Picture 1 (tube, rainbow, N blue to C red):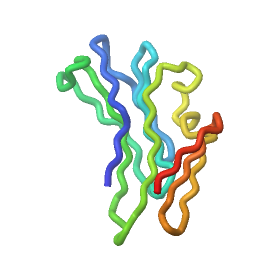
Picture 2: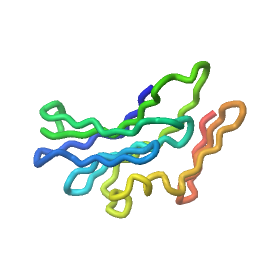
Picture 3: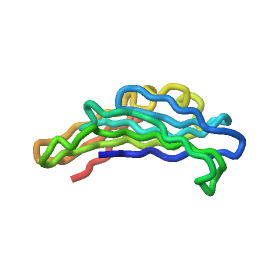
Picture 4: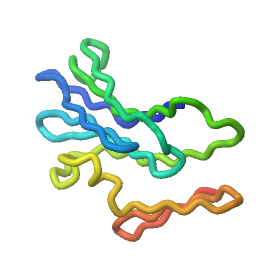
Length: 125
């Protein structure tokens, strides 16, 4: 199983990549950053960044952050993933900052509630 974040692309050079537990980011030198954070169900995930040259229409150099589970655990497996594309300098230097304060609650019936740091709530039945 694989979940990807937003690709960043740039003509001036290869975006840098950073990873942490169940999170990865790809950052352009001028700030725009794509991040993927496994909020639920990604235990044991491998975080990485795929780099490419000459394959993206938005820039010669590109990078995509992604998470991979080594194997499907079987049956139904719910994954909740936060994907962010931003140029906010306060968020872009640390892959751990992106998920900080974002909370997930999964009900037995499978309903998911996500609470963001600003208090916004999203529910998925």
